[in-house]
Length: 114
Length: 113
Image 1 (cartoon, chains in turn red, blue):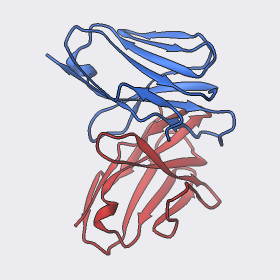
Image 2: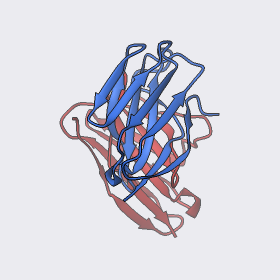
Image 3: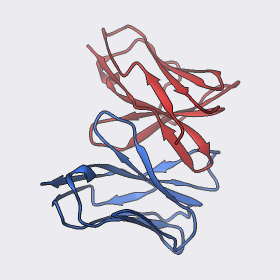
């Protein structure tokens, strides 16, 4: 299957700092990527749709100024958590669709804000 | 409110037992997918079903798509400890943007030796 990578896998930062998470499609091009947030033992919550060459589409209730998304190329999308606070601590996962109904997921990034 | 209702939320069984996880909706889906996720990792696609009434088998796992394409089930025969994980159903609707999936709340399965 298609491979999606994420970097870093874990990050610990101080409150008030910004953190950038990268999502790459390694063997295919992705004009669209999705960013999810997941709390322990819960399902995925879609945060936004990243679109190459245009603005990201955010889900209701997600602050676009706090979670900045940049789809720099056909293989790279980045999520920047700005001025992170402890409540932003979570597991962030990206995915890239290979068809209208199949997505391949990255391994996730564990963010801990102290 | 979750568009896809998954049940049960949690399932703990002994090795060798069978289990079934259900995914139901009032909406019609053009396809349904099942994923398994282990702690600290991303979900891994198990199967995609696209035709109403379709049944797919993957070794000890059997997946079914309802005739009306509103529901699906995952059945595991003779469960093994390696089947432990969070099982997620996800569906694609014709009205959603390309590639977007609706996810169920997940079923945590624990298989003890």
